[in-house]
Length: 426
Ligand code: HAM
Image 1: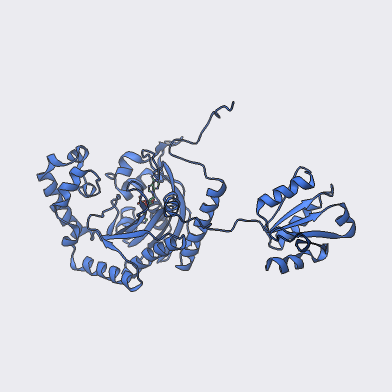
Image 2: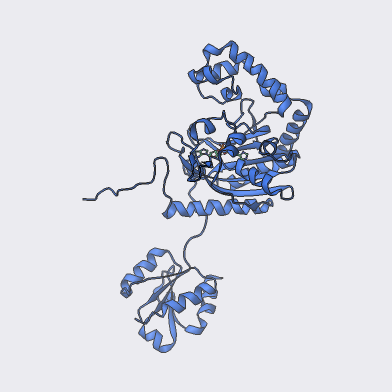
């Protein structure tokens, strides 16, 4: 009878290993490739920050800051939070180090939110993302959105929709927020229980509410696009025409305000229609032209997006896309039955020559080593036993050839790399 081990991964978290881990590795490699094509450099920041970075950045009234952050005091009495998202940390680092602009960062990071765990919603999830600081050119908005779109295409996803909106800048948004607050206060009793109490702190959060009661009130209320000033309207028109010029379809979504307070102007979300509505947001982002100032820096425009790795892989599965994202099959498996461990210098030589090379351990029998070689998926087995050792040779067996005679031949040890190059074409 198997007993339960004393520890499991914490609620809402999961271990990634085996074929799932190969998908992660491939997905991150695809993202790194996309980021490189668009001129982004990798940036790492600490996994925890002064809690003020997030309270000021994403907004104290956001659900994430209010209810979901992992906040703790360290032994020195400092109050920190585990990162619930990637943007505020990158902007904090930008303000601290003042690199030249445009500053173009890409990242892969865990993010921590105390949510109710369910399919596609975790307490530790992982994001790939980019941020650009130092320009408010609408062409950058188009680049950031297109990077995400082309990346999704490279994963084989086809059933994705881009929702887009403009939230305006401070001045036009505050007029809208005033009008929205008036409507919400007039229909206060019809809002959901939570928003009856909190709508006034930040009326935009009510637009994000998924409850029917709030949707009914806000649907009949003012809409953001009607309140945009000429500048914000012009900016947004350039973003949408830029997307059209590169064939990226979008759906104008006036309710889209997203969950954090830092957003200004362009906001967007990518939805995978193959997934259920609770987890169909596979990515989202937008401009945050005030965030650097809020974190104590000089006024600096910014824009970026983040995409959930788990959600992207769920979307692939739901769309039935099962092509591997990276080749993790070894080239060679070395079978050593000499008893002298000639495998150690041989695999070292082959790996230095660029081949992914595996071997068996523990002095197993020839039969047992061949079984592992077959299971590994390697293209070639190199066999070396006492006979080969005495002759200064290696038996090279092509594991994918059905013809046994043709599949196997002896090669002089010194010529092994040349023979492999010929067979493997690399
Ligand atoms: P977000 O929309 O909160 O935005 O998260 C980005 C993506 O992370 C979501 O679209 C979703 O795919 C994934 N995600 C979020 N929460 C969870 C969860 N609990 N479990 C699984 N996946 C999740 C941000 O975080 C912003 N920092 C994006 C951004 C970058 N805006 C500007 N720059």
